[in-house]
Image (cartoon, rainbow, N blue to C red; front, top):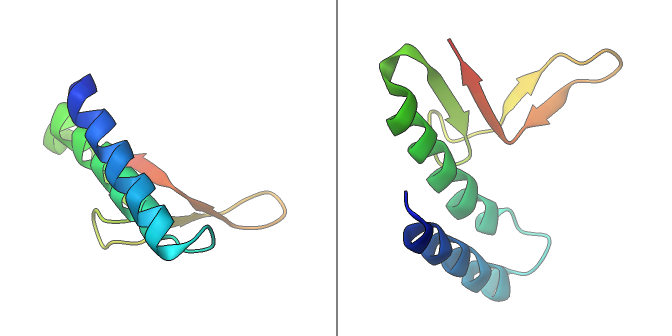
Length: 77
């Protein structure tokens, strides 16, 4: 993804924010999905990328020291 494509994704995400409000995660599906898809394309099949809009479409839950964390974009080997 080049700068022009990235700025278009940010614009689409902002439009969705205006439509759905600040509490909705719809804006993140657009933004995180595009970033995760770009990472997946650049990294190839050696890595697995999980994010809203990519993989199973959910954030990955990672075990934390005290609480589990929902990670926006996860990359695994």
